Length: 312
Ligand code: C5P
Image (cartoon, rainbow, N blue to C red):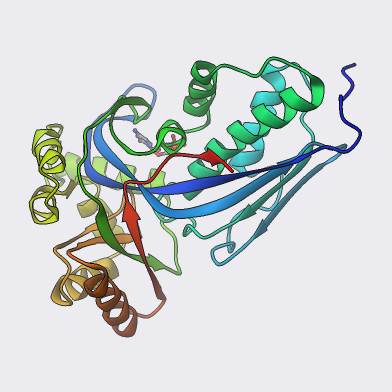
């Protein structure tokens, strides 16, 4: 049995950043049930704070603005990340993991994935230091990230990237400038599998969007660095399915654009809506107007691109 090196284990801290999909092209369902994607991810400044300390026993704590509905137990995907790292280092999975949630849960912003990415880094640092082991390689951490979920590798990497496969095969993309977002979250979440299923249904009935797997226009707009150009080409194949399940999102998109946003899209599988804005003032105005007109909504203003999960 391995023994920890330190008498009093250190507290390790990390930031876990949200993402938005600037382009989300969804191909056909594969034999494994996942859909082939061509997506462009951008990480956002808004982040959860994730802490981990090695110790006997297992504890998972969730606090913060967006804690509602997030499992404060070993069911949490971030705890699964600790277990995977421990298993790979051939150590027992134990300790205390805490998450301060600022990223809306079940919202299509990869908050759960980001926490899991941060937990991979934290557990790798903490366990290797406490037990005097060689940490897992970055390459191995990315493999574990892909095992945890389709968005976990990107939330580990951050910045701007093209995602292929089920979203886990990443290529960094050149991006100039900073982009200002008004993010509108919803009291009621939307399950990702149900949105993908709805898209399949719509397509089978000849009503869903045809797959938009070409990301070139978004790539060019990002090189140009002009938010107006980016707004003109942002696209989400899951949007018709999300709107079909949640018709209330249509009014949110309309209100936000009427309030001055360059463009509003459903973020990932929703129900969060992301509005690209020319400046901070407009973004604040979008938040104020959408929240005044739509019950159960909350808003925040954030910028991208940001980093991926980062130890602090
Ligand atoms: O990988 P992750 O656990 O985040 O995926 C959640 C669900 O979203 C999957 O079980 C699947 O129903 C759907 N999904 C998909 N195609 C993808 C990514 C996710 O169908 N590329």
